[in-house]
Length: 59
Image (cartoon, rainbow, N blue to C red; front, side, top):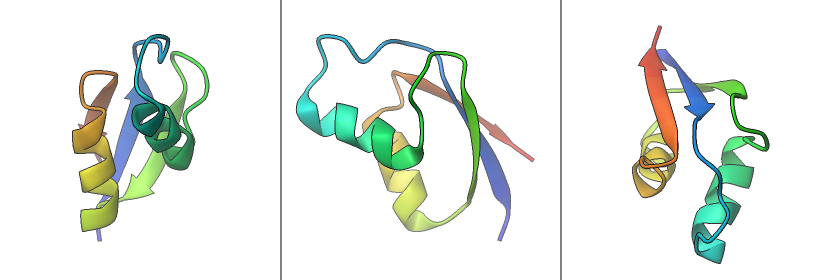
């Protein structure tokens, strides 16, 4: 599987609890933080839920 880099670019303030928990599940806490994940359907679904808060880069 391919790897993708996910970067948090916006704050989770005034977002729903579901979106905040999704960011935590992705391992994103601070703005500017980058994490690397496998390109699985579960991860892609989580990214789709918070795509307005993160940026994605393929390796």
